[in-house]
Image 1 (spheres, rainbow, N blue to C red):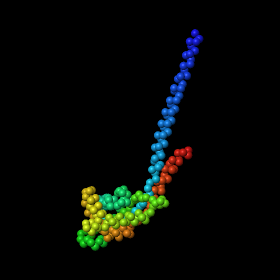
Image 2 (tube, rainbow, N blue to C red):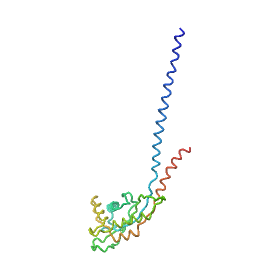
Image 3 (tube, one colour):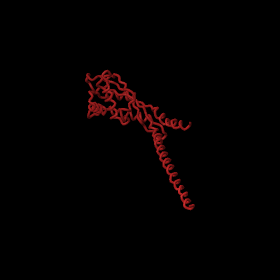
Image 4 (cartoon, rainbow, N blue to C red):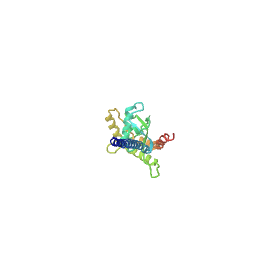
Amino acid sequence: SLPTSLPTTSLPPTSLPTSLPTPRPTSVPTSAPTSLPTTLPTISFAPTKPSLTLTSALVLDGTSKSSWNAAYEETFKQSLVDVSALIESTDDFVGNLTVSDGARRSRTRRRRLQDASVSVSFVVRVDVDTGEDGAVDIDSYVTAFEAELVSATTVDEQTGVSPLDIALQATAEEKGYEVKITADQEASHSMIATETGGVESSRPPTAAPSPAPSTAQPTTP
């Protein structure tokens, strides 16, 4: 009777190795890689291109300050976007336009019925590139902005209209607005020369260091 019971006691060790290795490898590698890559890209995208705040003013004929409304403002903004290489969208405009009645100084138009005019001051914030030293050449951007505004408000000798005039008419027709305004070349050029300027925006410096304190705080406790 003794030899028959002994071999049955050697069977239990076979159950031990099958259960131990299964839980360890499955739980550790799956959780570690999924959490790390999701947080890293958000920090790398934090730095943005520097921004430049540009200001200028134009003179428009065919309306007065009392007649100026949202349709005129929307038409003006979209038309500037269409003729400008620096302004990418109407979202680049900062705050509201400053509109005031202006005196007609153009000597090329004699009809007194259209003597009403307005001067429109505006502010835009645009993304710019930096030089090799990491600084923004503000003067070059202001000069470029001034040049494109002068070009946009210069009347073509053959057609008798300026690029901005064409954009204003096309935008008004596209949106279905009863807006009939044109850029006053002489008065606009005078305003561009005196009102165009630029200041580097304060937004980029605050954007880069913002992720640093948020990631450092949870590690200290």
